[in-house]
Length: 111
Image (tube, rainbow, N blue to C red; front, side, top):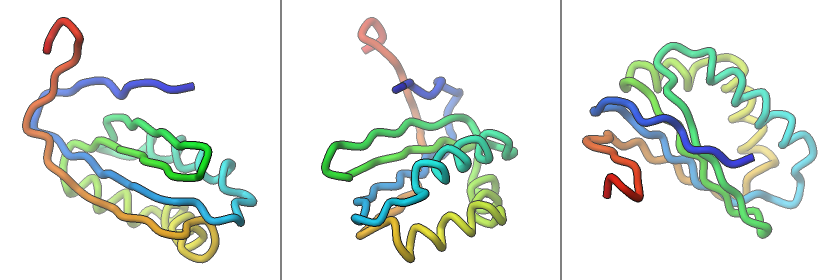
């Protein structure tokens, strides 16, 4: 089910993970579910949004209070294992971008 991450007071940070799945996705869905649950337990986690098309192109944006929280999440043991699996078999290609969110608003009435 798709959902929007809640809006938070700015500034905060977004980690934008854009990827293309490989043909070998055995275990991927289970790991993605586990990473979602694990991320929600991390200090500084604010929420996330994720989408994937039928060709395997996906984008997940996770939101964090600050860069310290992002760096801590990157070092969580379960996340390190998932990263290793992703590099070894699940992703043909990926890009990770980190951005500071200066302002955010929702709509259509707040446009």
